Structure formats: structure tokens, C-alpha cells
Length: 403
Picture 1 (cartoon, one colour):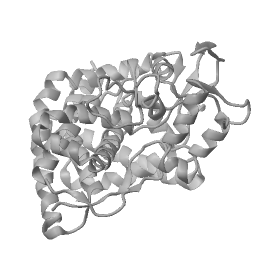
Picture 2: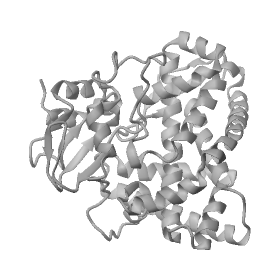
Picture 3: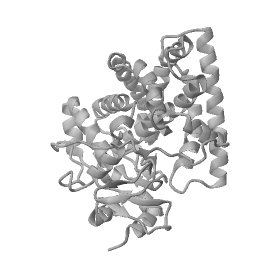
Picture 4: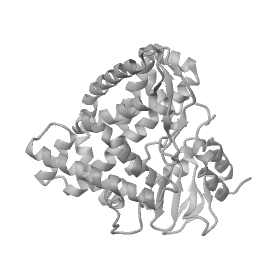
């Protein structure tokens, strides 16, 4: 049996990045929390068991940590660190309340017909691109749907949406495990500054010409003095919100299509009953979590699944492994949308639960609810290529034919 250190090293290899699931199974055989040799890694323990990961994600004594520097000079660290995604209490809750006040259930429910309509529109365009049996890349649709949805929600012009993809990728490359090379830092710094400037211009424009979109609502709250955040914090949160909202959903769509094409019976059932899309989305998220790893820092000495974690220790939480924990899910490696328990940690847990989870689910339901009805003969046209990222599990390309 390999040690946790050996398994963690293997996760960073080409094979481990392409398919980490066998390595997750090895970690489960060691235990829900695996201790690493002191000094061998930045992390003290790896958390892979479902219950342990759930407890760690809920426990606010485990702090979010982007950098140990309280005043980072690198723009990417400054902007990401200024968002609620990388802040601890009380700052996290202060910022989160602002977005929860405008991302109300009523507003989201009212937006669902817009998501359905945008999905149909983009499927029309997909059909034109794939006419006459032409091979097309499903990743293009998987990118365009969530970026168009979040762009429409925020009020970003469609003509600007293609601009975001490269800049987001540069930031994600930097955040990936082992992604801190100088050239990646330089690229991420440039991307974050460009995004910062874009949102600053957008906020200024809303002040001149107010609009009834999410950014307009946030700017109104900011200028009324009731929001509790300043303008730079709003910009930093918009940067993270857009990045996180479309990359993870893009991965949900490509991971889901990959799984469904391997089981035509599931496609047939979904074509007959689009209502199944909800359970399909949950099982895709469980089976192939878009986010595979999360870092935390223990603020005090504490115990997790029988293991002592000392104050100041870094902890690596693996949601992708936790979702495959056989102690939680029978037949955990099987893709089964009909299983009774569809719980997963792909959106986190507790006070840091993903603020955009409802929108991501909405997009997944719309896409899979319409895709196979629209293109009943959709099939693979070649081997999909996995992305190199270990942090975010998705695809670089997925060639398909529509008929």
C-alpha cells in the first residue's frame, strides 16, 4: 500500500491529473484523514472522507488562505484575496450578505425562463455549426452557456463575453496545484488587472446609466451606503463571481456529456422525461466534481476524524474524493442518477456554500433537459481531451457530431 505522500505526489502527475479516481480510492483505504510526513509537503493532512470533509468545510476554525502575506503586492493575490471566496469571518459574512440580498430566490426563480431561452438559442447556434454532420467541439457550447447566462444576469454585453475566457484561464492556471511558476504568476497578475479595470468601468457606467441588472443593483446598494462593502471589494467579488460561475459550470456540462455518452440508456430516459435532468445534474456533480481540491488553515488546535490538526497547519480537502467515499455512497465509483442519496460536496458546505449553486443547477437542468431532445443522434466524434488542471476537473476539447 502506498503512503499518503506517495499518493499525493501521484495526483500531480500526468496520469493523476487525467484520472485521480484510483488515487482517491487508495486514500480511502488509508482513512478519512491521511497524515503526511512532517516537512514533506506544505500540508499536514489530506482530507478525503465525506464526513470529515463536510465537517472541515463547515468549521469556521478552518480558515481560508490564499497567501500568508496580509498585504500582497501581486494583483492576482490582492484581488482574489479581497473577495468573500478567500476571506474569513466576519468579512466573509459581511460581503456575502450583500450578494444574498440581490441574489434572492425570487430573482433566481424569475430568471429561470431566461436561462431556458438562452439555452435554446445557443442550441440553435450549435445546430448550425454542426449541420451536415460536421464535427464540432462541445466545449465551445459548454463555455458559451454559463458565460452568456452570468453575463446576462450581470449586464455584461455579449460582444465582451469571449474576452473573459483567456483571462479566467490564466488565473485558474495559477491557482492549480503546482501552478505558482513565475510565468503563471505574471500572466495571472495581468489578467486580474485587466478584469479589475473592466469592472471598474462597468460600475462607473451604471452610475451614469442605471440598469435593472445584478451589477446595477449592487452599485445602487453600494452608493446608498447600506451595502457594507466598498467599491474595490465589489470589484474583487465580481471578478471571482464571474470566474467561478462559468468555469465550474462549463466543467459540469462536459463531464456530464462524457458520462452520458457512455450510457445510451440514460440518454433515452432523459429524452423521454426532461424532469430527470435535476437528478442527473446532482449525480454528475457527485461523480465528477468540478472542484477537486480546497485548501484550509487551522486557526486553533482541533481534531478531525480522530486526527489532531495543530494551529497553523495547512489542510488539503479533496471534494472529488469525498464524493466517492464508499462509506457514504454504495457503489461510489458508479454513475447512477437513480441512487437514493445524491448528496455531494461539490458546492462546499456550511457558511461558505457556493453562492452561485442555484444558478449552476439551473443551467445544468436546462442544458441536459434540452440537448438530447434537440439532437437525438448526438454522438462522440473522437476521444475527449481532459484539461491539465487538478484543481478544476473538465475538458479541453470534446469532439461531437449532432446527427
